[in-house]
Image (tube, rainbow, N blue to C red; front, side):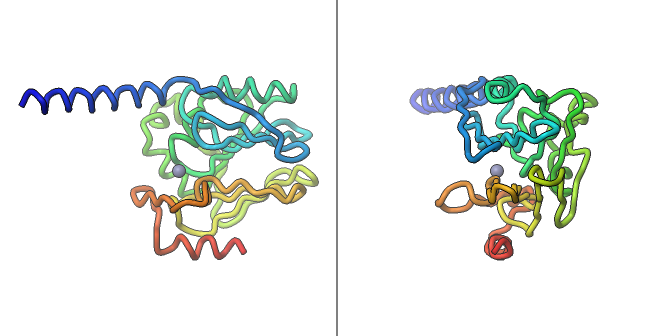
Amino acid sequence: MKRLAVLSGLLLAGAISLVIAKQQPATLEIQKVKDNLYVITGGGGNTAAFITQKGVVVVDTKLPNNGPGILEKIKSVTPKPVIMVINTHTHGDHVGSNQAFTGAVEFVAHENCKVSMEKMDAFKTEEGKKFLPGKTYKDKLSLLGGADKIDLYYFGRGHTGGDTFVVFPALKVMHSGDLFPTKGTPIMDTSNGGSGVEYPKTCYRTA
Ligand SMILES: [Zn+2]
C-alpha cells in the first residue's frame, strides 16, 4: 500500500510538472524558410511568419504563454505589425497563444476548427471569444493577393475534422499543420473529428 502511494505521488508529481512545463514560455528560435517566410520553432507546433506588404500573417500560435516570444521573434526580422492569425487546427499547441494577438488582427480557420475551438475553456469566456476565428471557410479560401496571396485548403478529415493546408503560392511552400507533422505515424484525434479511414484520402486530394 505504501509503495503504491509513493508511485501515485510520483505519477502525480510528473503530471503536475508536465502541466507547469506547458504553461512556461518556451525558448523560441526563428529561421528563414524562403524570402519573406519564416518559421518559429519551440513551444508547440511550428509557427509561420509571412511578412506581407500590409503586415505579418502568423500561422499557429503554439502553447499558452508563448505569444510574447512569438512577437519578439517577429520583431527581430520586421517592424510590421501582425494583421492576421491562421490556425491550422484546434489543438492547444496551435491555438494556445491566440490571446496575445490583440488589436486589428483577423483570425482565420476552417469552419469545423472553429466549432472545436468553441468547446475549449480558453475560448468560452467573453474575453476568449475575441480570439476565435472571425473568418471561416468550407473548401478553399484565398487571402490577400499578388505575391502575398495565401490559399487555404480543406481536403477532408485526418488529424482532426478541421485541418487546413496553408499554401504560399509565390514561394511554393505549404504549412501542413499536424496533418504531416513528421514522417512518423499520423495522430488522429477522433474526439475532434479526426479519422483514420479518411486520412489517406485527405492526403491524396492534395496531389
Ligand atoms: Zn494537432
